Length: 223
Image 1 (cartoon, rainbow, N blue to C red):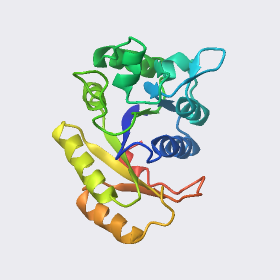
Image 2: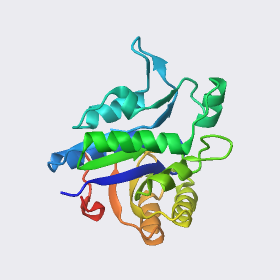
Image 3: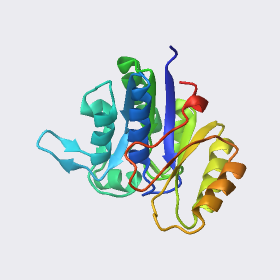
């Protein structure tokens, strides 16, 4: 079986990227795949006594069937819950794409999982430093992208702009997931239909507000 790697991004902060990534990992594992979730950059980490830990990274580890040390799952752990470039600057650190890519490729090679999901932080163009963004990191990895769309007012604009940016950066949008972050959203079905037509990428699934085991169509991922 060929090994596949995908970069998971979102239309914004707070759209449920980690939740969806963990659900996708579990769905792939249920199909018999060996899976790994990575959170290369995480801001908002706390001291656990064994080092800085981030809830999102821990959630991905819990959903993974292949286990790596925490430092490989989340090599850049930042304290302040801010944009990575600001949080890193407060710690007199600088996050660089080439260094981050090297660490992630090393983890992927060591794990040898059937499917690896690499979750970003925030949206597509979140800065890593004064010159590079997470989009540059995804471009350096050169892997297909899964987009998590938070279903709420404004999601159409955010999703279409993000998809446009992904394609302009030369990467393939492998699919998207609609995540019901606002359970009271009006015209939700119409919004999903609009995105189905406009995103030109397969809808992998709709995650309801309280659904712990949604149905995904994983065939478009070729896993």
